[in-house]
Length: 170
Image (cartoon, rainbow, N blue to C red; front, side, top):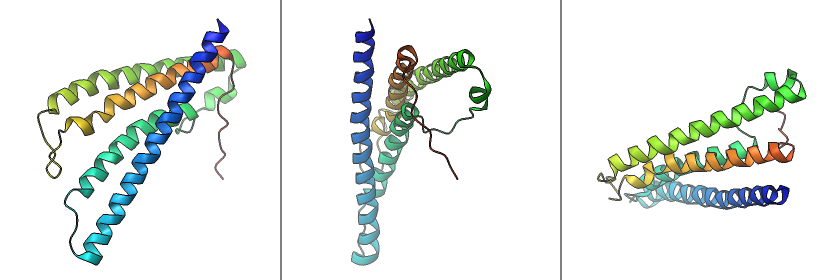
């Protein structure tokens, strides 16, 4: 049984490695488009008509996918004073409750995000003329990433793997 849990844990880690590559690509696209937009506007005098819209859509995807990625890494902002002062067993129960609440939130994101995506699918973006389904699809996709990473965190608890070390802010 433990070997299956370890296999699932590795699968979640590989999934996060893939999400990290997507995030890096989105950040690269966004950075290049914004740089080119500024260069084209102020140096060439002829800005691109679509670059700010694609950069905005990239930032949406970067935000929602990045939230799920950061959740797994333990780098989201949190109030953990109860976890620090609780005993080992109570802290474990609190962590599991927090993970389950996050999974419930992710389920709501997936369900309502998909409904919203379905409603705006017939609309098009003004500059690029792509369906507005694509930028809105970031909401349920982010929910899927959070859901998968909630499973990964539950596996961490089941396998008694210590969480990622938090970095101190000075």
